[in-house]
Length: 508
Image (cartoon, rainbow, N blue to C red):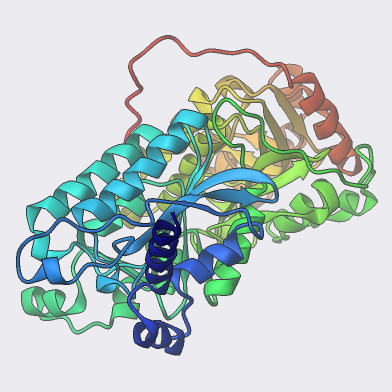
């Protein structure tokens, strides 16, 4: 017995050392934590329970039988974040550069299968040089096994990827299929083909950071949701973010006690809309003053800033927020903002998170660039996402809601449950000046001004839409939080099902 215990401790010690002290020091020299250090920061103290610590690779080629490390380059198991169960894997760059082997992939698949069985989220900490070349197609098969589980878990349990080092080649497709991706600036990158291949094929000279770094993916490509400064910030942000999410699609999101009264009146909202219809204001101010304690976790803040997406709470319960941002491109909808918001709405719907929509939208962005790049199809994604969503949907029109963009932004016609408007709301096909130029041609300047005023008097208010039942109530801005809280209470037991289908065919 004592001999076996001693052997167990020896093997445990070997697994904990990963690739050895020299490689651990090299990891630290790059400003990066090791796989196990990351899990200590991410999870509640003492909660991590490891599985498959002793697993080794089964490769028999290229001298690999003489080079085995317990754990095979990935630490897997489960733990808790603020007392709630989560399954995790953390790739260990000190062991074979975190390269994925058949057994390495098997370990990841095992914890993903367990997460699906019990209904708990999966968080993956990615830090890998790619497929283990010595194993050839076996390592590629391992990747595909992980991909298959990403797809099956999608919409069943939340999946979060933290890119904390290299993630290249086929490896990028697993994080890409998860719900959210956080990256670390200057130490993580994602690309299908690296700078050397790019230079060979296209003759472009580009650095790893420019090609697939955290800034690139959180601003230009929208692959990543956040770019964090370092490992510690990324892990602590993941802990904060986790608290907004339900454990699975069968569970409710967690409820956080707070001292913010549900019926708090926010008088400053009565003056937030500028006197001029063309003057911008910050929609984030409206959002923060409506949510519990001003707490708002924004997703993709650096990409498509003309629309805001993120999570907050009302009466302690998670809500998803989508809002046009007048400070950026006047809050217009374009290709990037439509894709960004559509994916967010679909996530909220999959996990039963109510959606609050704040509307101030002048329409879709015109131009050949938008049309030739498919604004029709991409704009339809957001329309489709809102229309298929069965979760509680509450919409507040603060100022403009023009044209097709009015329809798209969670209108009553797309099964909006409660659609409110501030007295400053304008709901029309287009702005008064443009409408008059189309309806009345050849007018003098004075006549045009007169007709413009007539159009404004008729449509520059929410009452025409309210008279048709398209708006449920015109509300005081200061009562917005109270109205939303009451609405969510009413909608708590909402039951709505779409017609049976294998799956829909959203215009991808």
